[in-house]
Image 1 (tube, rainbow, N blue to C red):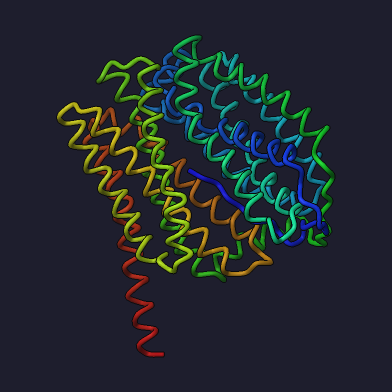
Image 2 (spheres, rainbow, N blue to C red):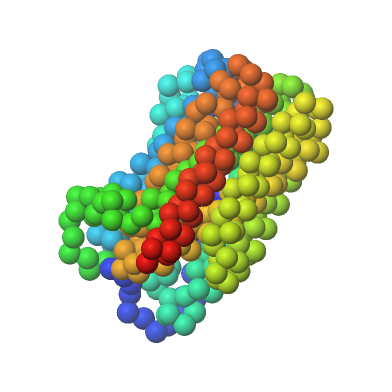
Length: 409
């Protein structure tokens, strides 16, 4: 999933000079490298779990703890970007991520790896401080272009994480994935500490007030409630699929990690949704686009169910592309809607929105391996298909209410 955040006005620096191309490239590489950490484990669940003594029924907790950690980081650490000097905060969080990855590489049992997974998720929330920081360093006239370049790096990190993890695991084992990443992220933390400029926010709120105000947005902003609900269901379906699919390929199709890497790389084609959804949202088609995106997610599970039944990897991969397309598009429609609410609260609106849907992602991954064991891919496809249909039903109810309000108004 792409992750986007708009700079909080509290953190905006007064500048007329654009960031250098070198600095923009550093931000792009850093966001991509850090966000990839939360996706490495997805295709490796079936390999890691037996190696560290986790029963098959709870193997998907390896993904769940990372997602829960990321949600906790969004909720508890990202608001610090509005209070503390950004360079030090980012370098420390990225450094903590390197330590967590190192712990994962040497994990001696299930408990130690699950603890490392949680820490990887928490510390990887640093990306949600980096993006608004580069936005604060950029003049209004070119902010969209510069932030877009950084977001391209972040999206590339998300897309390449799964196939890269599978490929490295195929060559050198799953521990090498986390060990290599730990070394690279440690070097990145040093580089960020040396090269990033200082950005000191001037917000006069206290930390607790920021957290309370962010959570309070669910009470005051109905658009946020609706959009978070849609994307929570969509992202739960996304993590359910991408946690269960590698297990299916490993055990039923007898794929190696190299084969799983190719499968994941094909699925990444769904990222093409980003520019299409962005143009549709700008043209005012956000609501019909949302309904279409949710319907595509449901359709992807129908196709995957048939593909698994006839043992067709082509149909399973096609379903993955369609799923990624729908989830990515729905996310962009949601972000477009909530960013239009209150510019002075965009950072907290985004934090509240993303915390909710990453909790949904954690729930989807948590049940993946158990569903696969209990009912095979058929049960996975049923649950995965029901999730977007629930969101689509809620969407329909809201549209009926909107039409009734216009009629009575």
